[in-house]
Image (tube, rainbow, N blue to C red):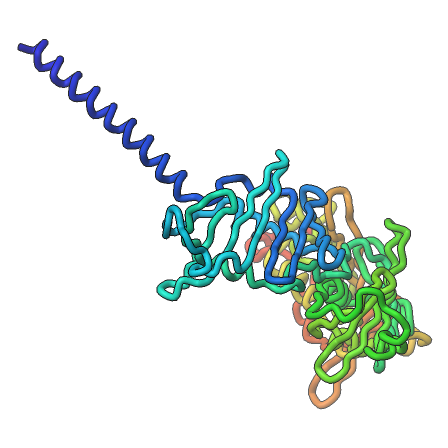
Length: 458
């Protein structure tokens, strides 16, 4: 009895398995039949898009880049062309309309054609007809098949793109980190800056640390300047004059030492249109104006306003010197501040608060040379503090700030400050000095002071 039951179960299992495998085979076949083209987009080497009398021919140059060969020779926007390759190399159809049509004209075939050529030298041509008025799908067929099918409506977007949509528009391709010098001339400004290590320094018309983000914004805007329209493929003097580029409003000269290259970008704004060209291109373009507001900034706006540029968490050492105070502090691996050389604990909160005040300290005004330090109480400063800053592995720097004369006007106190690595002075609000405890015991934890460690520290 048990044997017969087992046999029946086994037979049922075999039948179910056969049914499953057959169903899966049919499903795969049907699934495959749902594709008009079933290839990998990585295999596509050429695309030819024909729309009436217009033909756009794309050729893949390498793994990453495409070239437009017709109607002009120009670099292609690889993202747009890759999308075209993706859409049509793996092309799903909505349904079959007619297996063996007698009249293709009723479907508007062929209205457009797109041909894909593959690495194995095979090619597929897809003929596109009119829109199906019921759901905006497109009538289509392969040139090597009889049947007429419907393709998804989203295909129309790719087919209707203009030539400029397929062109590479960022003609000022620029790796911003390779730029080491920049010179800007504009209607309202003229300045130069140089990059030393990771810092930008203004070198003309004055010498000053620059606000890095201001220079970075200009370089980023240049690198991302994209053509709205290509106005000239091979610029000449007449076209340069027409678009105001024979005597441009803005000249931006860039030095790229790694490439042994100097690049100058020329810009002119007329009405709401920005016209651009450069020494590295024969083209003239119109572009969105995302840069002239930065180029028009005055030199004072480009200067670094912070007294010292660092992050609180980077500070590993602190030295303080006043008339009543001379201490040295070090942060250990547990992020506790310790007195040196005794190794006794300091008040973490007070130290971090003071360092944060210094980090956020910005100038109200600059005092540029020539000047006498004595005039600002900085020949023999009453207060000096030095920060030891770790900027990276095995890379540290010392920042020494000296505090000079303090003035009071209309109830507000200001102080003259000097960062010893800079050749100019700052005038700042003196509130931050309230975070500077005057006595050594004030830097100790309250518990330490209460237990008599104050005397030991002395």
